Image 1 (tube, one colour):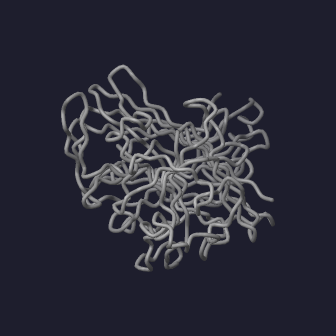
Image 2 (image 1 turned 135 degrees about the vertical axis):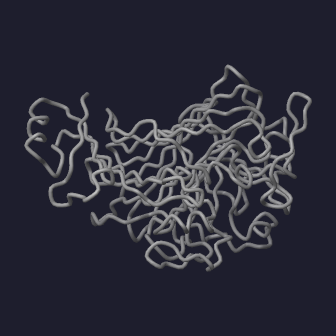
Length: 399
């Protein structure tokens, strides 16, 4: 397929580098029409991508926003800093488009104080106990940023670096943004030069797909995930959201939120989401030690997998008022379900909204926390010649 650059006539910018729309030309007829000038794409189009400046990091590195829009009007805006999804606009049951993710209106908010809003997470998602692990007889000491543990890659994880745009185009399955990052040997204490590719695609069926690939030149560990804070009602708490998780067991944690190594059944506990259950149904049962440790849900569920590495439905969330539903599909063996327990009203986000505890939830497909220190868990080791892969899909609909 061909590709061309166009400018909307009604919003022609003074700086022509600021806004570029990339569209797929599916026929010579569409090509001729666009040469004549057009503001919207044809009915056969798969969508558009818009690029805009979003400021600079304190080091002076430019940061850009890419807005992916499919033919049905759904939009995902992604920032090169942290690969962060800054906005995700999906239709509710009345056709009104709502932004269903938390975040900031400007770059400074993400840089100064962000609990991983919408970010790509690595080199290791979740916690590693005491910031240490051993691999091939050598002990590695990581950056500790969640004392006494290392969390989400350390002090400067993948959420705090500017990713390189390798490709931004409308492809066969919809608008696509391909980001890459080289995590150098020794970064945050991790061994090996890790080459990472993260590809976002906004599909025709209102799904935001994220595909990770990574390779290394030295044995290392790798566990990449995504950390959007969702609220399918567009605001307020999420206690009325209804959740279903395809898991019979979960990995209990100690008071430092590090797995004990056990796999416990969810049956008869507040962690049983095998049938649709409101988030608020059992979240305040602090007589349960696990609920008490995290102040709500912040745990890893062991997914019921038909095949290791298979792309399968992990969870489903629905919000009765908006009618919005979200399915989570993944190739990962686990999923972290977090209910925004540590939001405390000190963050003012988009449109001046103050974020309080339980104003959002996260669904983070992943390998299990602290896997490098638990040989019985699915391995997160990555060796030269191997390719790490993880696919995550957030698919939206209404009911």
